[in-house]
Length: 148
Ligand code: DQA
Image (cartoon, rainbow, N blue to C red; front, side):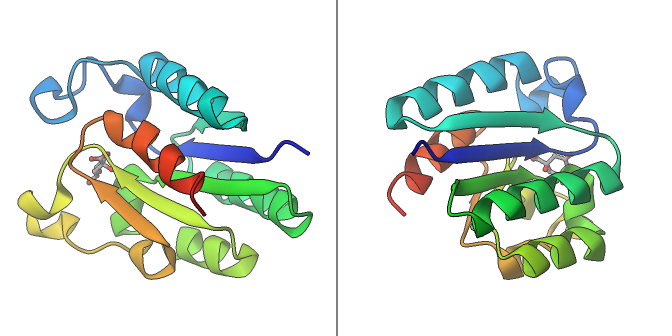
């Protein structure tokens, strides 16, 4: 049975490519999806790739991944919660409540940026954190999930 990788992206990541390119680079979210498609193909995973600017949508998708996890069909979830990383108890609770195996991902090195980006609600429930590797981090996160 093929396992699925969820890659969920939070607010403003739809603007990748034009948004602060000095911080996030010039690749678009479609480029990131392509990179994830290729990484999943390398490992025989099915990919679910989504983005939302709405916290509740991300919560619902984590629950959806949680149902696959309960059925033994989830390889892992890569979550770039973007700004919600630093604010969202709801996302923390969704990960805790479902037990999904999670890689927290940030394109930029949040620890080298403003102090309010140094705290993450997600890290406490993440198996791993990837940050500062640019969009290449997405592919590396999927490679790491394949080792779990
Ligand atoms: C981000 C870092 C967050 O602090 C920021 O709010 C984002 C993107 C990153 O990928 O580097 O929107 O998660």
